[in-house]
Length: 66
Image (tube, rainbow, N blue to C red; front, side):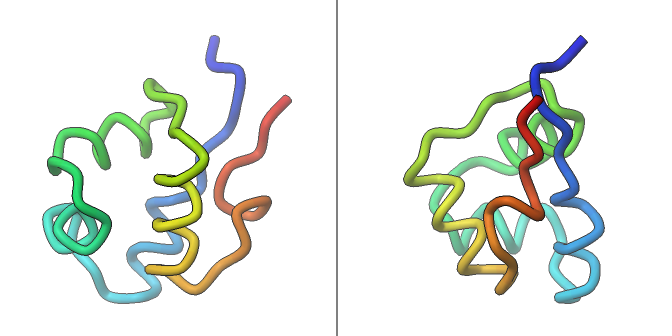
C-alpha cells in the first residue's frame, strides 16, 4: 500500500496535458509520470514543486501523504 495518494492525473487532465507533455515540461520520462499517477513512485521535492507549478495546483492537493 502506498504511503501517499496522488491526484496528479485529475489535475493534469484539467490542464489538458498528456503524460508525455507534462513529462517534457518537468524534465522526466513519461513512465515517471505514469508511476506517480499510480502512487508507485515517491517524488523528490524538486519534482513535486515542478509538477505543482506545471498544473498550477498546490503540492498538498496533488500529493497527499499519510
